[in-house]
Image 1 (tube, helix red, strand yellow):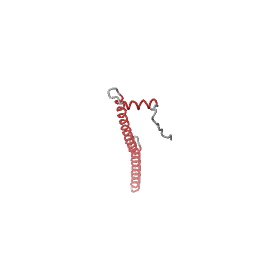
Image 2 (cartoon, rainbow, N blue to C red):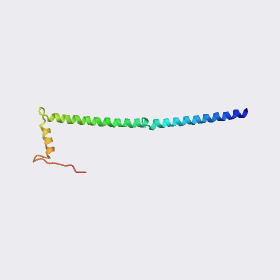
Image 3 (cartoon, rainbow, N blue to C red):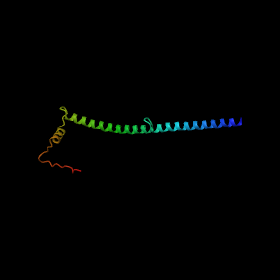
Image 4 (cartoon, rainbow, N blue to C red):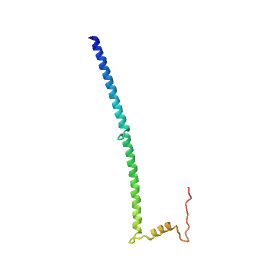
Length: 108
């Protein structure tokens, strides 16, 4: 009877070891997946960076849109800004007054 009890104890102990190892492997897998998975911490950090970059880009585009809206408003008939109209025409036609000196910045 003593030998059989000893054999059971070894089997039970081996079962606990196997259970512990299996549990540790599952925990390790889930932990790694939580860090690197599609919805893991790394992915959340990348999404936060992308959100802040897109928010900055949106603010820049909204400022540019406001600037262009102001120019369009100033070029409409009721509030026509003649100086702006002349400036735009010169740029588009690459023209200048005869008494003007045109400076171009060096390339490169």
